[in-house]
Length: 282
Ligand SMILES: [Fe+2]
Ligand SMILES: [Fe+2]
Image 1 (spheres, rainbow, N blue to C red):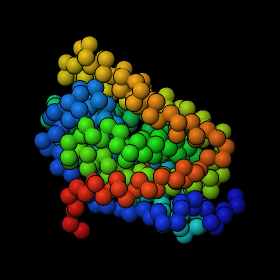
Image 2 (cartoon, rainbow, N blue to C red):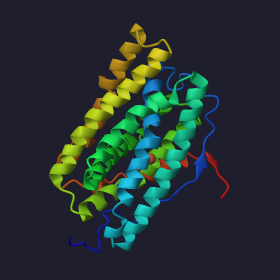
Image 3 (tube, helix red, strand yellow):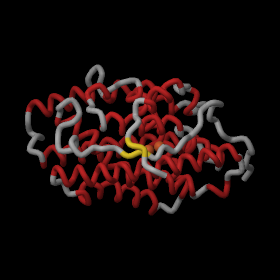
Image 4 (cartoon, rainbow, N blue to C red):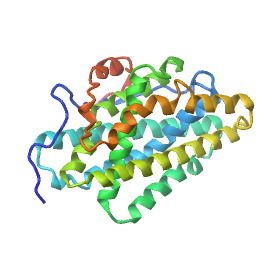
């Protein structure tokens, strides 16, 4: 396999920095912290629930190709990617444990759907498939990050929650091309990455909504007219999840797609500057 030396597609001026932050979420997680809305809160809590398992798989799938990459710039970006995702895992694990403690949720049960999904993918024994899954997931997180950094849903978050989500969003944007560039370098095909985004999208909605419904059922909020109305509006309404993400989502299916074709690096500083959190002493 031919390995090109220059393979990073990240623009000059963007640098992956690992910010070792911690967040004080104590007083928020027992409440419907997002807009005082049970559906939206459970949806975001469910996303958090998927991160520790998902991000471990993202790190492992990229690391599996470390010895195939020679471009020093991309190698440095990979190291930043491992560092950032590692911090995200740590903070979301703490978030999830605290959430389950505060709301009396069963952490193992809620997390199990993502553990099962990663096991199913790994069972195929093809590491390019797992990397393709990471590339698809990273596209999803990058476009969600852009919406958050532009203020979508963020105005309804209390400080603390806002800091955590903006910190994560900013770093997702910073490293959005790393898995993609590795995938391209090691011969990942257009067909496979398109296929993996379709698969990822299907499972993303099934798993995320099933986790959201589990939380709402536990909280005795699921079968309330107000919750269902809010859920439909949040998912499909004018400023809803699907319509907000769709324009950037579909770009991935183009043959000449690259995450930085859409240069939104202007969002990086403003997002991360407003997400200070509590710096952890080195
Ligand atoms: Fe992350
Ligand atoms: Fe990521």
